[in-house]
Each structure stands twice: as structure tokens, then as C-alpha cells.
Length: 223
Image (cartoon, rainbow, N blue to C red; front, side):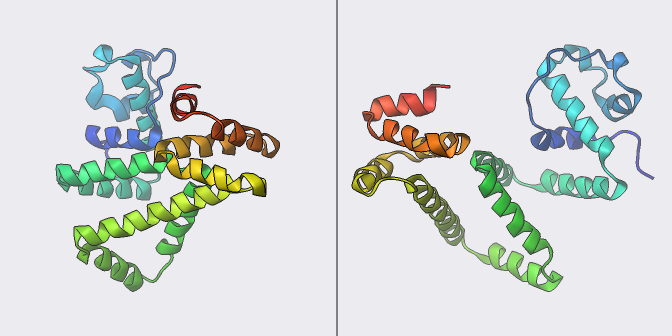
């Protein structure tokens, strides 16, 4: 039978998926819904000393846990078991991957989800073969694969940033894009994706016409 309370570190690990934004004010432990109290019982004594962001994050983790089916809880516990056995270096790599995931736009995240779904539906033997192939790679080989994926991502971004650029301006635009650090290109790409199609060319022309330092401030420091 599943216990009423979850392992506190397991609940904390769910925060990675639940997000860390704080709400305005979180209630005292005694005022939490009974279902949340049962899950968060290991944190009862520390609750009053926690800041609002910590309480809000733990509540979201508890709500996520409570909404899981028994099968999903078993899977989460298994993943936590894997996490607890990882070395600090392996955990740092997982965190790095998560940060990289957060930097992707919605379309790129959807492509990765689709790839994962295709992987899930492969025959077990094929999935195992791919896992073993990855594990057998030397660190340099893995880095080469990941670097290739990043290069493809940058090329894809570049192609989309160049869409709609008048032919007479393509060469100058391409030179500017190639000179921009990756973080600036990502910031420009995200801004253009958030705009209506008709406004993207205006933003592109504005950014291309800026001096490097002005462009950096505009893309990375302005809201």
C-alpha cells in the first residue's frame, strides 16, 4: 500500500517540474488542505521558518504528487531512486540539461517531446540497444553528438531568423547574426517568435542596425 506521506526529498525533486515562482502569501501548515498536510508532514516543523517561495514550491510538489496515480507514484519513486544514486557530476549534468530545455522555444520543445514519444514506442530491444550505444560512447563522442545537435539548432534558428529578409539585406543580416553570441541570438529569436509576423521584420532591421554594445543591452537587459 502507498504511504500517506511521500519521501521529503522525493517531493522536493518534483519542484524541478513544478516550477519555483512564489505566490503572494502561503497559509500556515495547520491551514493547509488535509491532503497537502498528509504529503507535507515531514516539513511540518520547518514550515513556519520557510519563506513564501519555499512554501509555494513545496505545495506545488505536493499537489503534483497527490494528482498522480499509483503507477505514476511508483515511477516517480523509481526516478528518485535513480537520482539518489547519481554522482554529483551526473546530477549537475541533469540540471544542465534541464536549463538547456528551458531555453528552447515551444516549437523545439514539442519536437523533442515527439522524438521521446517515438523512442518510447520502439520495441524494448531497440530502446535498450540505443541506450547501450549511448552508454558505450566515450565522453568526447557524446560531446560531439550534443555539439552536432546544438549546431543543428543554431542553423535552424538562423534559417528562421532569415525568413522574410529582403535579398539586398540578406548578406549584411547574415554577417550580424554570425557575429552575435549565442545568448543574443536566442534572445532575438525568442522576441521575434513572440511578435506577430508583420512586426518581426521591423525588429530584425532594428537589431541589425544597432552597434554591438547597444544590441547586447537591448536584447539581454531590456524587458
